[in-house]
Image (cartoon, rainbow, N blue to C red; front, side, top):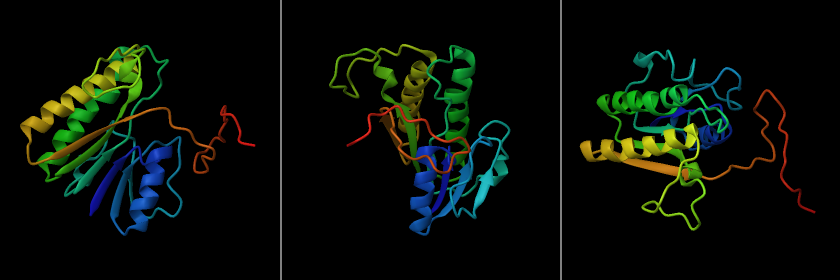
Length: 183
């Protein structure tokens, strides 16, 4: 399969890219110059992220793994957060589907729940507390509407919780773990 992985230089994305390559898929990544390509990656690497991308390079995609986002929960610039996480995602979804993509998997976030009491439910209450969370909730709503308008396309949103990494070996900057070590 021909796979497009946005955020392909991030922690989750680079691990996904490695897996897809090991399964002999053709992989195109969109990444951030502050991070590095996954080890051994020889495929097409598009920059600068989704802003200013050469859309002619993104054709005949079988599956989109959309992991790119501004995930800074302390960023209070709602307009920029919505541009990065919602508007660029809309353009991406529309482009890949117009060019034949039938499968979209995108990263959402449990941040949409805010201070709602657990257990969380997809159809349960949400309480986004910051621009990041609001942008992800609006992306979820857009994706559900987009899926209704494109019934031949499978769209899956994954509401990730905090992602822990012990080693982030592909990053330029070494990790600073605040997790409790195991003994």
